[in-house]
Amino acid sequence: MNEKNLLRLLLHYAKEDMYPFHMPGHKRNTALLGETLPYALDITEIDGFDNLHAPQGVLQRLNEQLARLWGSEESFALVNGSTCGILAGVASCVSPGETVLVARNCHRSVYHAIELTGARPVYLVPPVDTGSGIAGSITPEQVRCALQAHPNARLVVVTSPTYDGVISDMAGIVRTAHEAGVPVLTDEAHGAHLVFTEQAERSAVRAGADIVIHSLHKTLPALTQCAAAHLCGTRVDPVRFQQALSMFETSSPSYVLLASIAQCADFLEAQGAAAFAAYRARLSDFSERCRALERLRVLGKGADKLENHPAFFAFDPGKLPVVTAHTTLDGQALLEHLREDFAIEGEMAAISYALLMTSVCDTEAGFTRLLEALFAIDREAKFCEKPPVFSMSALPERRCSPAEAAKRSGRLCPLQEAAGKMSLEYVFCYPPGSPLLVPGEIVNQDMVSHILKAQAHGLSVLSSRGALPLLRVCD
Ligand SMILES: Cc1ncc(COP(=O)(O)O)c(C=O)c1O
Image 1 (cartoon, rainbow, N blue to C red):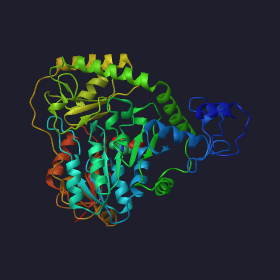
Image 2: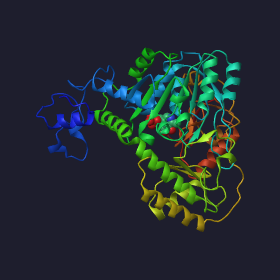
Image 3: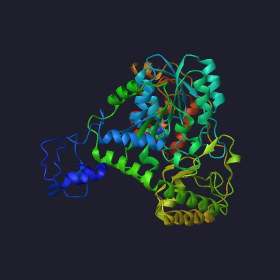
Image 4: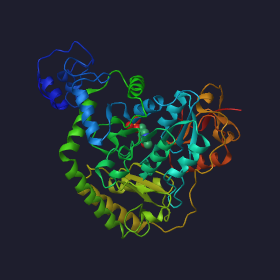
C-alpha cells in the first residue's frame, strides 16, 4: 500500500479481504453491526499502520504535518483531547513540591495535572470584565511580579484564548518568563484555529510558548477528542514530554480519530486559506449587522468596541458572547429562547451572557438564522439595569496544596453549612470547568452565595464527585 493519506489507507484496507484476528472486538463486521458507525475503519496498530506511541511511518508523517502547519519544532497528534496533552505538559516540567504559576481561570485538567504532580500552585488572577463577568487576560506584568515573588517557579501556565475567547499577550508573557528561565505552557485548547486568522501573531506557537496544547475538535473540523500538542524551543525535554504522554494517553488510540486529525490537517493545507478568508468575511458581516441591536450586546461586535473592555488584551472574533446584562434575561433564558423559538443550540449559559461558538465550518444560513433570532429576542427583551456580576478577584484562603488535600479524609457536608471548612473537592461551573473552589481552600460565605446564585440562574455547578449540594470537607 503506497497510499500516504491515513483515511484513504484505512478505506483501502477496509476493502481488502483481511480477516481481523485482532482487536477491536467488533471485527469490522458491518454486516452484523451496520454502517452507521465507522466499524470498517476502526482498527488497532496492525502492520502498515504505525504506532502512536513510537511513530515511524504514517503517524510520524502526520506529526510532521502538524508541526509544519503550526510552526512548532515537534508536534504530537492526540486522541484523548487536550486533557492528556496538558497532563503530560505539566508532568514533563515539574516535580513534587515545585511551584507552578497558573492562571486561576485554567481548565480543571490543569488543576488535575498540578495535583497529580504534587506541585504547588501560585495563582495569577485575571481581572474581570465588569459588564459581562467574563475573566480577562493575564498580563506580562502579573507574570513578572509573580516570578519576582516566586523565583523558584518551574512553569507558567496560561489559557489563551479562554473558553469565552479572551486572548492574553502571550508574546509578552513568554518573553517575561523566558527572561527568568521559566518555560510556558499555553492551554490553547480553544485556539487551534488562531494561526489561520488575523490573530495569528497572538497564537502561542508564534509567541514562542514552549508547550502549546490544541483541542482540534473545538474550533476546527475534527472529531471530538482530536487534539494536538506542540513543543517549541529547547526549554522542555521532548523525551520527558513523550514519556509523560505515554502515561496519560490511551495505549489503544482510535484510528478513526487519528484519520480525523489527518483529514483536518489536509483540509487546512489544501483549503485553509480560502475557508478562513470566507469565515472572516462572514464574521465581519455579522459584526456589522449587530450594530442595530438595542438591548442585547455581542461582545466585540457591532457597536461594542473591544477598547471598552480594558480587561481584555484581545478577543477571538469567532466567539460570540451575547451579553444580557441590560435586559431582564439571564444567559440561560437566552439559550432557551434560541433553542425553543429558533432551533439554535448555544454553547454555554453564564449569569449575564450566553456563549455561542462559531467555526470555519459555519454556513451563511447559520449566521442568518442567528441574526434573525437575536433581533427578534432583542425586540421583545425588556430593558433593565443589573448590578455588576461576581468577580473572582478575592480568592478563597488556602490551607494546603491540592495534592496535600487529596490525602486528607473528610466527610460530606451540605454546601450551606460548609463555610469555614476546608474543601476536599473542586467545585466548578460546567462548562467551562474552571474551579471556583480548589481542594485545600477554605469555603467562605461569599463563595456559598455565589454558587447558590449560579444554580438559581440554571447553571450547572458540579463538584469533583459530580453533584452538589453535598461537599466533601474537613474541619
Ligand atoms: C480551556 C480548556 N482547556 C482544556 C480543555 C480540555 O480539553 P479536552 O476536552 O479536549 O480534553 C477544555 C475543555 O473544555 C477547556 O475548555
